[in-house]
Length: 208
Image (cartoon, rainbow, N blue to C red; front, side, top):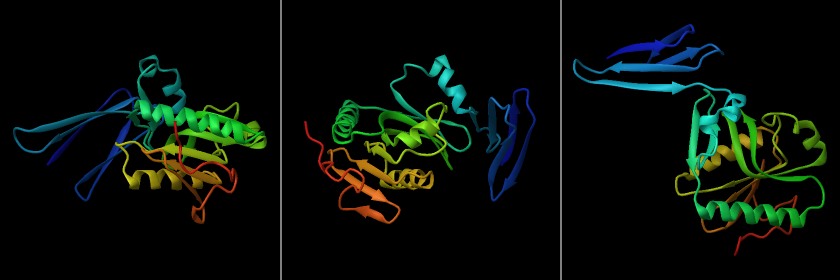
């Protein structure tokens, strides 16, 4: 197998290890095109878009798309389609939180810096103190105290557990998961909770 690397106006280096190709680009990188020659007649080519979150926010081609947009740790865009049920649960959770807490800020679609790139929590609650720290940032350098994710049919349990770990690493105190049936699960660093310790009367089932 052979590898061909095409790059656009920026330096690039690469390492081949264990039959995998690792590509390293500098911070000015825009895109990398990788072509793998598997045999004499078959080629596989993929262009990888490299972006920073600030660039995602102002890119007109990415606005008004019916997708949830995030970045992985390599700066690649990850898009997830959003269904009506997802939007319903997101709105209901936001309104419930606003009715149950009288301090801090409840926000939808909060961009958070994590060890695996910028992730966007579906709903968050942020204390006044923490909001003052992040309100002028493009993406939150510290996670809000409560980060809520809605599971869709395209998400595996492993993916949701990974996001939960990322938010807790980013200093969230609790991570809530809402499944496709509206059932709520509450977690903190110690594991799953019987109910939220921060909003003790939040329901375990989201209903119409």
